[in-house]
Length: 318
Image (cartoon, rainbow, N blue to C red):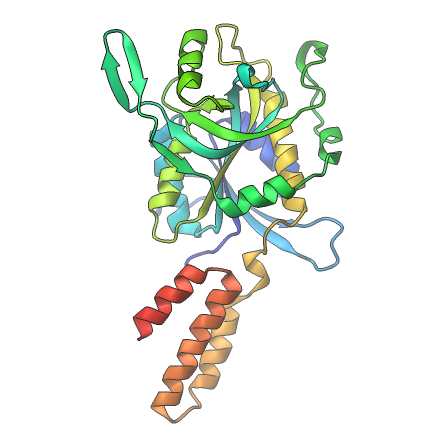
C-alpha cells in the first residue's frame, strides 16, 4: 500500500530545508536508492496544546538543483512514493516592492504564473498571460482565516545588519511569477508587473511542483509559501536568506499548529479495511457481499475527505 502523508514540503536550498527541520523536528531520514535518488525527511508533527492528540504526517525533500525541471521531477517521485494530500512549495523568493512587499515578509500564492512561454518581438519578450495554475482553494481559505500574530515573536533569527525593515513581517496573498531565471533587473521586474499588476513575488520552482500536482491522477492540493529575501533588483544579495527562510518556516508551523485541515492519519485506513474485510468473509450471500464492499469504499473515501474519488468509485462499481 502506498504511504499516505498529510503534507509534502518541497525546498530548493539547504537554508530552506534546515529552517523547516529546525522548526518542525525531530525527523527521520528516509533513503531508498532502489526507488529514487532523493533523501526524504519524515516528521510526525503533533499539534501543540491539543487534547485530541492530532498528528500531521509530514515529508520534506530538498531538490538537487534550482528550477522547474528539478522541482517537477522530484515532486512527481514524491507524490508517487508518499501520496500526500497537500503539497507545499516552500522557500525564499524575490519580492515586488511596487506592491509593498518587503524583505522578511511572507508571500502565499493565489496562483503560479509562468512567464517563460511567450513571444519575442525585436528585443522584447512578451510572456503569455494565460499560463497559470491556481493554488488550492481550501488551503487559501484556511490561510485567509488564520489571524494569529504570535508567530512573529518566534522567528528566532534576527534581521541582518540590525535593519529595522522586516522586524515585523507582513503576510501577502497574491499571484507569484515563476521562471528559470534569477531576476536582478528592475526593467524585467517591471515588465512582469505590467502583465500581472498584482504580482507579489518571483521565484524558480513552484511551476514545476504545481504541474506535478495538477497532472497527477490523485491531484494533491498545492500551495506555495515563501519568505522574501530580496527585491529582485541589481542590489540582490544573499544576506537575508536565512531570516527569510526562518520567517516563512515559523509562519508555516503556526499555520499548521492551528490545525487548518483534518489529518489523514486520524483514520487508520489499512487496519479498518482488514477488520471489515474479515467480517465480510462471513457473509454467505454474494449480493450482500457486493453491497458491503461498496459501503466500505464509500466510508473510506468520506474519512479521507476525497469526494471526487468517492464518486469515481461508485461509477466503477456500477
